[in-house]
Image 1 (cartoon, rainbow, N blue to C red):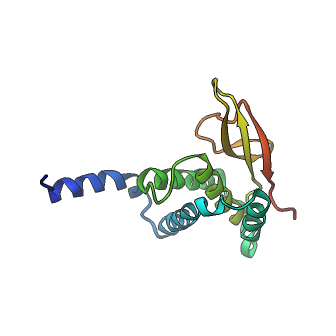
Image 2 (image 1 turned 180 degrees about the vertical axis):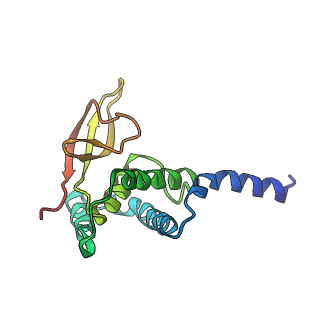
Image 3 (image 1 turned 90 degrees about the horizontal axis):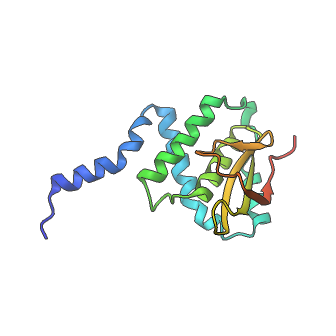
Amino acid sequence: MIFSTRACLSRLAERLAPLAQFRRPLEVALLARVVTVGMTVPLLMRLPLPRLAAVLAATTGRANGTRVPSEAEAERMAACVTAAQRALSPVVRSGCVTRGVTLYWLLRRAGAPVELCFGMGRPGEDLVGHCWLVRDGRPYLEPVDSPTGFDALYRIPPPQP
């Protein structure tokens, strides 16, 4: 089998294309945080959920009196997580758990009042698990209205002021 350098570079460029939208220094820093947290999610999920909640709570809160992120900033964070999952798999795994834990960490560090839910449901015939964020009692930053039909079995609430 002959490997073409041009073909390999073309495939690499195609794979990394979702990350091209993050070019400004603050966006590159956001991407670095997303990748760092996203890579640790498989290890974090080995913890019992109460311990996971304690670890995530230890890294959350409004640092230096920062303001709550705007809706546009929160959506940009979600877009960055999605882009990292698409471009950097398997380093940053795809799926709702990596997305949920990473976004919870980012948003809580920014001071957003979100909670992380783990649940089960039957959106079809099979019983499946799902992880999602909730803000003001409603699913938050979900790509689709997927928590419909899921019951939250464990919630990591926002820290109390």
